[in-house]
Length: 281
Length: 165
Image 1: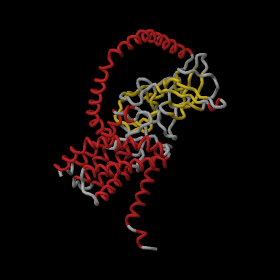
Image 2: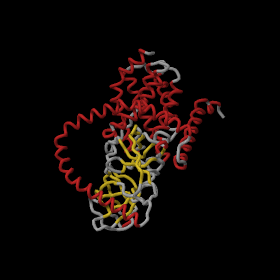
Image 3: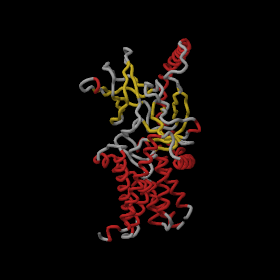
Image 4: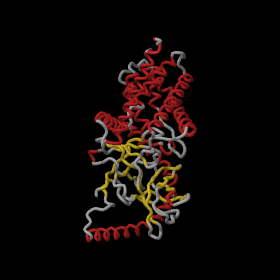
């Protein structure tokens, strides 16, 4: 054997590669199997979250000023649109209250304590977003101290945005629903057409900016514009969280190949305040 | 410089995340993914213009924080950032520093870093994007975005490093 074969650089490179692969394997097994990351990761994440709060304040301030200026340009037109919506909103609110009271009364009569739709809300704001093209993740400022648990669903003010993948003491990581990661924990959703027939399925991936709902169980006709909500069947997400609206249905062959393209209701690129929905039943 | 270099390094780390959040409608527009690499910019400028010691060690530490805080998968940036520092040092042995030279070295580093990150994510199975899509949708826009930040920040950073050398 030549002496040059074992020169120092090659050994260093090999050792580095082995260490790197070991660390990656360790992280993935922790991520899949344990509820909270290892101690050193937790410590690092807390320290980083604290400093991030300080550093992100000026950037958030600048961003707010920027969005205020652009809002000023659109104010008149937006005002007209909003006035029209407010009138129908009052009627919807009254109807909502009546339905809630009736629902509560019926639940008491059936002696149901908790059902699929019950959840507690934890409000958090977004600290940062992962600067990576392959991980669609945001970091929020609430952790186990506030009661956040792994795999809880997370909503913005408009609809579902993702799922909690990692929880530290004072911060958590939320994987967005538009993630392209094949190993992600997917949402079980359902939609109800105008005749009242419910179709259940899973969000199996993304196509462009639309979510793709697959694994559909029956072959009812689905129209464009139908609202899609979570079905609660996965066990970790409450029922009734708004996901989006149907844009297009593509049937290929039998009903198990039907794919529904959904436009998400929440805007993934404008996330500031989010709510963690912790299922309580 | 002993304290300013790590301080700037961590500020660059969190700026990457904050900018990715607030400019998300431009960075993560449909079919385009720009990755913010201000962290690498600070490292390259420090290697070329300052005599800060222990850059290698600090790059390992910052890489660990990047992995732990942003992605949750250790071992990616923890080894890739020191590799970038080593690569830059080797390249700069043959050239003298100037705006254009450091620009080209920075672009090479961003390409290598983004390419290695893509390859590692393919290995783990976090993504299945093809190479053609990667180059068109990720590598190109990332280079353009980071090039813009380089042009804006080069002279202030150069003055900063030379003043506090």
